[in-house]
Image (tube, rainbow, N blue to C red; front, side, top):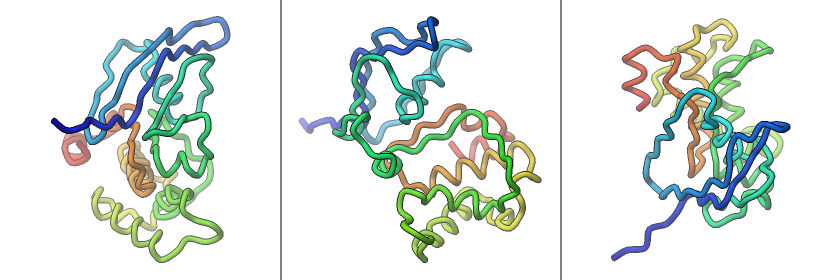
Length: 181
């Protein structure tokens, strides 16, 4: 019998927005190299849990271990190499090209300027997600589904070991839902 490695361990996690308790004493293990789906009603805390796991929200009690590292002790750069997070919604303010948006997924690897490897990763991801033809278009001018494909590409360009995707196919047509899954 082999040893099952855990990608993420959550132990006694609790979280509140002000006085509104959202998560209470949650303990769960997510196995490495497995896809896990979290189901629940609207407002039940699914997105909050993912935001906590990604490090975007601070939890009040409990512990999260990601690939053997206590989440609270990881630098942003180290966390970006381990965990990639795709939020439910993204609002673009500046008119960056699709290529530039996806390249920001490489921030955990870039010191001053992107390397040729960073650029190669972006090109491979754009091809893999089927949006190479959008490479030079402005993100702000794309449809909602196209923007979602760009954000999926961005998190894939990050090359994290753990992907946290919050409703990744919600804005996609049936063909792209199938393709991404």
